Image (cartoon, rainbow, N blue to C red; front, side, top):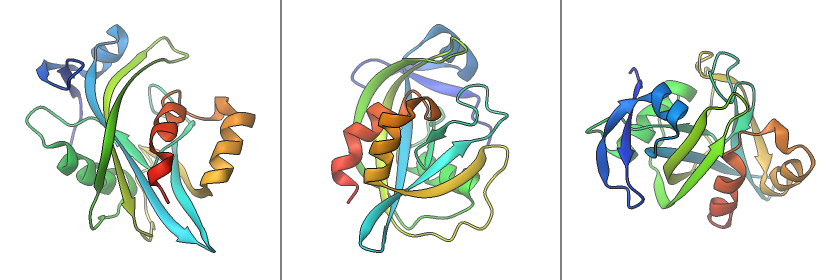
Amino acid sequence: MHRNCVVLVDENDQAMGSAEKLLAHQQGLLHRAFSVFITRQHQGETQVLLQQRAASKYHGALLWSNSCCSHPQPDEDVETSALNRVVEELGVELKSLTWVGSHLYKAIMPNELIEHEFDHLFVAHENPAIDQFNPDEVQALRWVSIDNIELQLQQTPEQFTPWFAPTFEKIKSVLS
């Protein structure tokens, strides 16, 4: 599916129309988004699947971020969109997602594009076998413990997308 539009929203997530995705990021228009965190239990600790964004992405290329994130299209349910996008990016079908909240953030990217999103946060407690991911979307994947993510965010924050730290901070208490 082509995801070239975003749903413009107000600060209460009420739809106010749509816009072309790049234009919304150029003008910093508030739009609806979702972030998916896939977790697993491994050797007694919770790990999160992190995604390194593909080199071809127009913003955030080669930076690490949550398992999957994107924008629902106009007239598309947010959770359904998130489940479909996990398939498109990671090549796996999750059994379910749990909505754990939302937050509003604004981040100016190094290339002067602006992420201004009303972000719906989802968690999946699964351990999917990821054999083939979409190389147009994903450069690499890795499982990382919550403690190691926190350490990496302190030591090398520049290796992460600008939206990852505030999103991770909002959601980390429900990841275990």
